[in-house]
Image 1 (tube, rainbow, N blue to C red):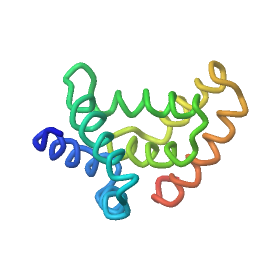
Image 2 (tube, helix red, strand yellow):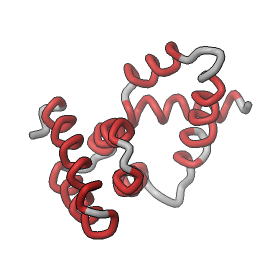
Image 3 (cartoon, rainbow, N blue to C red):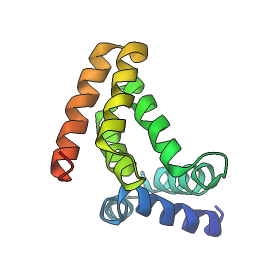
Image 4 (cartoon, helix red, strand yellow):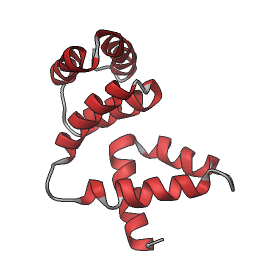
Length: 126
C-alpha cells in the first residue's frame, strides 16, 4: 500500500462523503473488512478520484448514474451527499435520475428518486 496515495484518498473521501461517515467506516473495519477499506481508499479515492481528466463534480454525476444502474441504494445515498458536497444542485440530481429512467429502467430510477429525496430532505436541500 502506498501511504501517500492512501492519505490523499482518505482526504478526498472525507471531503466528498463527509468525515463522520468515512471515519466511522474506518473505525468499524475489522480484520476481515480492513483490506477492502484500504483498497477503496487507496485506489478509488487516492488514485482515480485524484486524476485531472474529470472534476469531482463530473465524477459525482457519473457515479449517480452508475450506482442507479447497479441499484445500490446505500451507495446512492452516500453519493447524493457527495454530489451536493461537490456542487451539484437538486435540479441537476433530478435530471441525472430522470436520464437513468430511460437508459437504466424505471424501477431503478424510482428507487433512486426515493433514496435521493430522503437524503436531500435530511440535508435540508428540499
